[in-house]
Image (tube, rainbow, N blue to C red; front, side, top):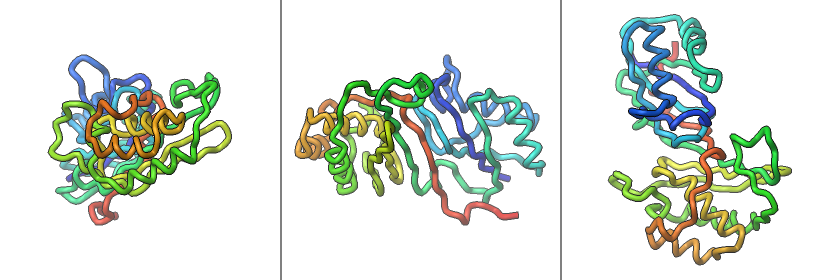
Length: 250
């Protein structure tokens, strides 16, 4: 039987989601906790991977286990073995061929900026001090993302992917008080893509580059022409959406 688990974590202390030979990752700790409780070696498959320092409010992973278990009891036991900055929020039974990565219809991210210095947000926001941004220009540039599909210019160099195409359905900056949050949703994202998009949109906001420059950067398909990647600590994976028919209601 196949199960999906819903996970949330603060990524500050981890070298990303995916297993690494010489660094601690979220996937490694999830594997260990589940394997200990279920008394069988398990390796969960995630919906995607987040880089070192990136957070997740919602990420799904799947695993196979041949017998039924008490969901609430498993949640309690697994969470008791996990550190305080990682939580398993829920467990769902799915159809046998459901896949956490390949069945995902869309993924949503938020990038959080705080204007000024706040010690309580130092690990979860990019703090900008004495920097003014033209948010109207940034939103005009963000809207342009929806008119393109090839985002090679925002992909990490030498990425091993078959295509650089992504269908972005939402991209907007929303300011509230001293907080500025970028919301973006697409069917898929390239490695480092959101942070590269944010860094380039910041260049638009500081008027270092124009809207026309932004368009030419996308058309040029060269990472060297885009802006620097925004710091990992401000990035959150917030939602992974699936078709309802892969879940088994009991």
